[in-house]
Length: 288
Ligand code: GLU
Image (cartoon, rainbow, N blue to C red; front, side, top):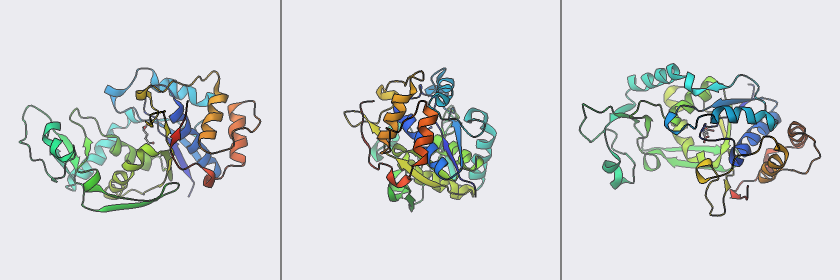
């Protein structure tokens, strides 16, 4: 089977250091395997989307030497596929409509674990749709973080797969598209480690393959928070890509001092001596 990896940014801001780490890490794993590296724009959450961010990310990637091996998949064009997956789950009785408010769920830490909605149906308000979370431990071996176990009901509860506003949740869209793109290994930031059991459960219900998973360390700020657009991590400068790319490789625990005049040259040199066993495992602080 051909290895296929991917980078799947959300257009909530321009490319920042944490996303460059995920992009470069997934690219290197794909090159190591002699496979393909695809890009998917996760633009299914219009309220959180920043105008122009999708374009800015897609334009920045080649400046950092990261060129996808195929057309970019836009989640905003994939509504019919999500509808079909949702209908499949609904027909099989795996989902239920839910009118519970945040206040209704406060006592259970924001989680829903009843397997059915306990709030009265509201005629004037559409429901969210939740997936029954089984009282079952999902176990998988992460390529970097080792064996992971999660009891879905305890940790995630009956999670939302279609929101009140009608948007599909990240978990469903991600699973449908990883399957559609034939992704064999998901390499992404460790902030998504606890989403993976939900995704594996969905894959099983939908009858699609479970890819391998490798969760990269997270870049954190001085307070130990994940670096992200929402914590104010600065955009990278695509006009001066080499220093940021060297920092991203160093952050991943890789050689960053190889001579290269361009980002593509640096990535080629790094991939020439790349071994995934050298990847740093723990999240750490960066001044990026
Ligand atoms: N779109 C998600 C994010 O930017 C990543 C999804 C994934 O890699 O599965 O955080």
